[in-house]
Amino acid sequence: MNDKAETTRFILVRHAQTKWNQMKLIQGMTDSPLTPEGVQAARSWGAILKEYSPDRMICSPLNRAVDTAVYINEALDLPLSQDVGFLEQSWGRWEGKTLAEIKEESPVILQSMVDLGWEFSPPGGESRISVMKRCIKALQRLHEKWTGQTIIIVAHRGVIACIMYHLLGRAFLPSEPSVLKKGYAQILTCDGAGLTIEALNGVALK
View 1 (cartoon, rainbow, N blue to C red):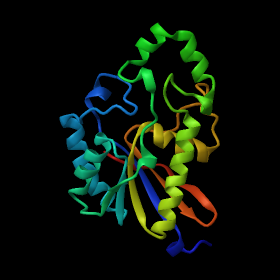
View 2: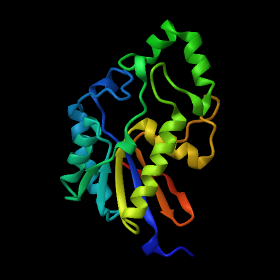
View 3: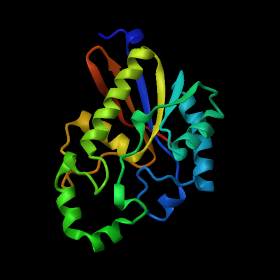
View 4: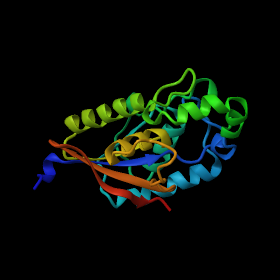
């Protein structure tokens, strides 16, 4: 049995709703402010996450993640810092467009990219496998620095999907059923044996 003192727990939270989310625009590394609904939601998440006795919070440096973390932290008052390891996947020249626009403008390129699974990389952007590798390294680094703590990670949909799909052994192909529920946080643990999923869709942020 693993010693709890040597096991770090991570709670992965996606940032709250932004204006670009409402408009169905691809954000990637481009920032967009939280909507009033997003601000209200983030503020409500603090009380929910408090039940897990977190020790600290880490967020992506993008403003939508930072702002979400700050609003969550109103109820928690945790040490809060940023980590570039959790930046969203860059979508390059496709940022600021809707998926429908990309399908209309570049249907062949989009389909060929999507069929690559982990190697998917938007024109001028970053591949999913690159995102996954830097995120896993970031989690391992945090485990080594704050072993035994419970850490909230406020990041992005692409980041969380890359982490979870890696741990689930998925190919990241469109034929695979969706498993990550909207409005839920994911719980991981990390010890000497590596990262493990403690609870898929484990925290309802509602």
